[in-house]
Image (cartoon, rainbow, N blue to C red; front, side):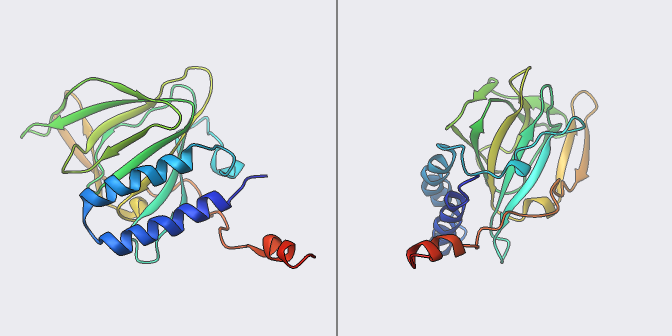
Length: 204
């Protein structure tokens, strides 16, 4: 049984952070990082259906979206060998590694739309946090770093990311294509059923 209270607490803390900081990306990323790091320190809270890989493609499951779409929380589940295309986000984002490992390749785009790799590939392991945004670097390709088992990461974005118009870049072709990712899941976890703990407090 997953301990969904960890996710509920994160949602409450992050909502408070957004209420306090508004659109101040620097503060959101700085103050949000330890909150996400605390969430991904434990792997006992994510319901199994939101951590299940697919043989067809990586899964992008919505866990929560703020009522005003100021931020969303998503679980990414990677089967062995799965990866994204080179893509951007157009909003700030944080990635926390929950289980397994991811490889991230960072890119920039020249004036012809050609993605050019910048820096080195880096790997995320459980507990580590990565960040993206148009301000600090927004184009990357991510893949499961493990050949034999799935990997799971938790992403927080500064919008309802499944409804954001973004871009895919084709290396060697100089082609930029718009895309909207949507979500793999059709449901979200029930964060708000606290009846069991209330009954326990009542001695029932």
